[in-house]
View 1 (tube, rainbow, N blue to C red):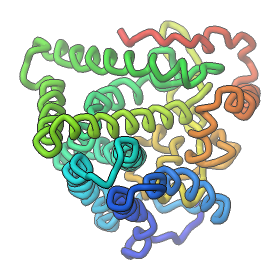
View 2: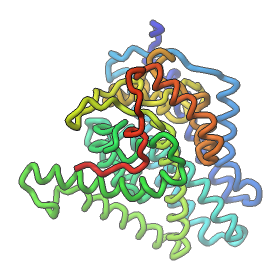
View 3: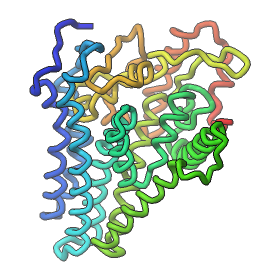
View 4: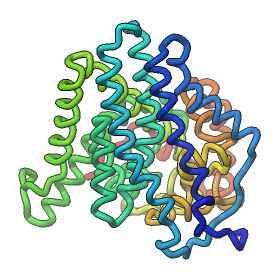
Length: 377
């Protein structure tokens, strides 16, 4: 750790608020149309990839014992984003659905860009919020996920992914040599089923039926129906179509990141269905400065799984000796994931080196390489 890094001043939190600059870009795309409809994906992917190259790595770590009172400006960021995204999403549905100056293609492209925001930023912020103890923050996480029709992600992430990451029982741990085009449809199905089963098992341990009102899937459904209803009231069937467009893009963005975060990394099986404890080496780490500001340190994923209760400004970055390193930040790596031959060429040698470094005693990796992940029992 590099000592002396303080988080008290609001200036230290300011770079993480850069995501709010994407909101006016969304409105510019809707108002002007034409080539401006490409601005959001260009800004989110290519501009930040370029900024990563210019700004380099961020190897500073904050003191993980920093008191909660010093994190006000950081926690405010994720809280304020929720109403900002809500107003942006539904304001644009109202405006774009009846905009005569935009062609159908331009309207769809505007909401492709909106989906980049609600996925790259919105779902990411919901991920931060759902890990907090505050009921308000968890409720705000539910609102963000309902805006992209992916509410079950909260149950799947907290009850399945964190418990089973790096094992065959985790649907979103991408297996070695499993391409994204095979991973994506599999994970869409398995995550929903595993989330439902995890919640039903949780209720069963309390001797409650799945129909009990405390089952969060009733809340998830009500919130999602509410979002769809609002989209219809503001934009009619065109509003529904635009809403579904951004939701689909957002989910795709999330699962691209999930694919990158644990590709080929597995926890050692100890026998009798037990696995070693989660360590920093079981997630890919990325220290690129600019994209970590945009993604509120999501790329410090090794520490997030090692210490899931840490707020994002306190997440630690690790060196090569402690965690495997991605060659680039998420903006570049998610693009590479969409090109399977390129992805395998870049990542498979890194997975093999990781195995040699951390598990030289394992000679047969075939049980770990199965691409079909059974659901948790």
